[in-house]
Image (tube, rainbow, N blue to C red; front, side, top):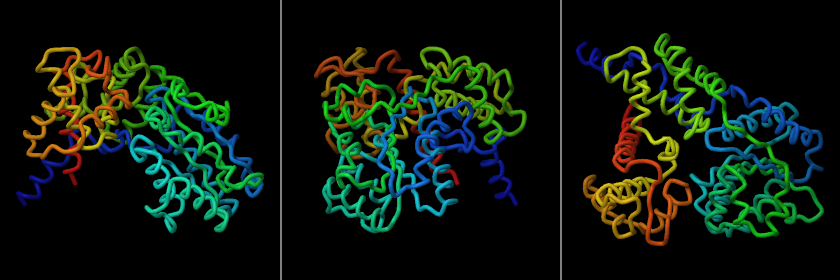
Length: 400
């Protein structure tokens, strides 16, 4: 009896009903203020279901800042188009791949695409070109269709991976004939990655663009209310608190990033619970906001490899100990080794590669080949934030 009561006290939250509904990985069925973009995508691709055998590949760009609902919209669209195809007895898959998480390079990206679209023929022995050829042939033979969505395409382009050329010219695998890849959706934060593209890639990219403007304060509040109903117990979050969070995250430096708003809501709830409260107060939000870095969210940390997190912490340690705006690779290596020693982990891998990845992700800035830093946030605050996020992620994995 005692152990049962202890279990209830340990795991029953006084505030939360389901924390996972605040996770950046959760995709809700309802997307407030993104119906217009979903309708545009359905209009672009819905008509091909009338005669998919004659449909040619169409490329669409989905463009918007961080936290503007691009990924949720693309996944939601994919579910809807799959449902409509099923109703018409058409075998259609929407294949979503995040280049930053699943596609470290051209080879890995195409292998993930093949594993999701045609697991029967997925093989590590195929070259990138062979994988695309095998995918097209498999779809033709099996009379199946796919729509591909590649998220964070700008990340790969900045790393010199010329995947745009391959993906926009898939029709040339069977010149003059339709292929069973009906569409390619490319998600990016803006158009700045164009400067990394070759003229041949720009010419085939096209100008079909679905834009995602930043959310306003009232729109953020609508989104948060939906999540509050799923994530919190009744009375745990007031209208005043949601107004406060919405206003904070709608203006600079956050600029309408709803992921930051969700982080604020989650961590404010954690703080209130740890302080023995059954509701979130504005002061809880203020305390959390003061200790977070709006430019780096839980999702950014989740996307990093375990080693990437340790290298980032090592860089922060170096900035803090040196009391400088920028440090060199030697200082970063030393900080990384200290972080590993504290955690009983053997340092491994090339620190330079992880630092370059952090630069490509927009987390670390590079002033010169020997100067690396993180802008607009004190190193001590960022260290506390990173330690807190990593600890929360570890606790989240340990919980049943």
